[in-house]
Length: 396
Image (cartoon, rainbow, N blue to C red; front, top):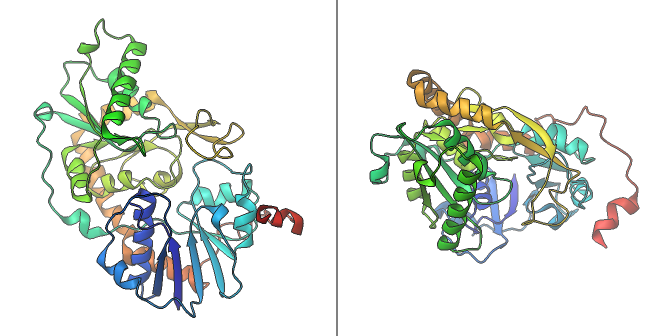
């Protein structure tokens, strides 16, 4: 089988990393894969040597095309035996967009978590079958030793940490609220945020986090002076993969309060490194954490305040998962105080991670390509009759 894989795997983003790992999983499974990249930003980053080699493959006579692109960029081509959309979403539907029609044109869709396959596809009224193909990871990365960062402030302290972008969906303010509310100034804890605003400088990102921290502390009103709170450490520079892994080696417990996550690579990395991630009970983390971390109780609520994406996405008639700060606090307290339980959970996480190796996910992809897997929404009554005019409206 010969597969053309189209994706933004040269962009240096989490999305690009996911695409690289999918390509390498197909290669590990023995599939002849032909990678072809698209660019969604101006980054010029290195890619794995094996992908550079695979790019030399001839793209003629491919049997299948996997389009790992934004759904409005999808294009059905009848010259392939199978057209596959690989996409992600962090809310309960995206009916406000043309994405349902675009995806419905394809023969099938692959998504990284079961919530998307079972619920999002149904509520978005998509008529093609959906298969869950989780993100893959290079297990050799987690088997290396990494030197922790030399930060004097962290000496003899339990370090909570976060890695990711700064945006509304990531809900970083909730992490700060939970940490500063739960832990008294005299307790031996610390917090590190490795975060940045896409497209902005490290100084601008750090300035934003400092302002956010001040707002949180002023709003909490726990102490007369902001200097009485624990001092945060902010890292906002671009880091290599090696340096990111050093962040994981420095921390003890990864914390994310995101409203929605299709996967969350940093949380998975943390689990694979034995860092007992604490994440909102949503999307990808709901699938992969299991007994290898902690899930924060959440409730569904209307989206609000997302102004850094397409106008048709994350609007108020969509819903996402809002984590309970009080439950997050209790999980952070438990991680800090119950070292024996945390050690057991950490061991579970390391073991769980191997279910998402190149070999394991490569076999999942191969099963989908060969028609051996059953679609998640195959038996659901979601195949509404769409008119030709409705399906074609996005192509105008």
